[in-house]
Image (cartoon, rainbow, N blue to C red):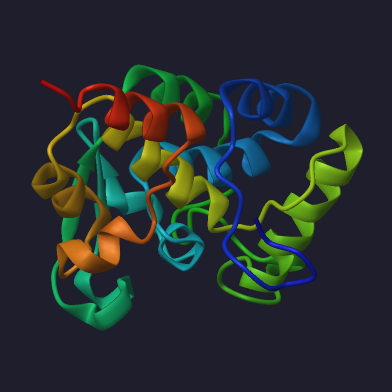
Length: 184
C-alpha cells in the first residue's frame, strides 16, 4: 500500500470501488476518467491522452504514441458498466476526452487527476490509493477471475509477464487456498 508517496497503490475492494464511484467522485468527468482506468487497466497518462475519436464502435483505442514505451496500439472493448459511465459524461467539444481547466491545456494534467483522486478518497476515508490503484485493481481482478496472464498482458500492454506479475496482489485467502491443494 502506498504511504507518503512510497510503495504500490492499493488494490481496491469492491466496496471501496462502489463508494468511490458513488460518493467520492463529484462529477461525471471524474467518474469517466477513473472508470476508464479501472475497466481498461490503463495508466492514468494513457487515459488523459485519449481523444474523443479514440472511442468508436464500442472500443477504446490507446494509440501507440500515447502508451508507455510507444510500442503498439491497444484496443480494449468497452463493457456495459463503462459504457453507462461514459454516457453520463459529455466532453465539451471534439479533441481531448478530458480537456484541461479553462482550456489552458489541451488535456487534464496528471497532477490534476491525482488531486481529484486524493480529494475523493479523503471524502470517503480511504487511504493508500494512487492513480495506479485502478490499474492494479483491474489486473488483479482479471487474474483472480482466472483470465490467462497472456490475455491480461494483451489488455494491459505489458511487454513481459514478469512485469505484469508485479502488479498482481496475492491475498491471504489466495495463499491459503494455494497451500490447501498440496498433499497426497
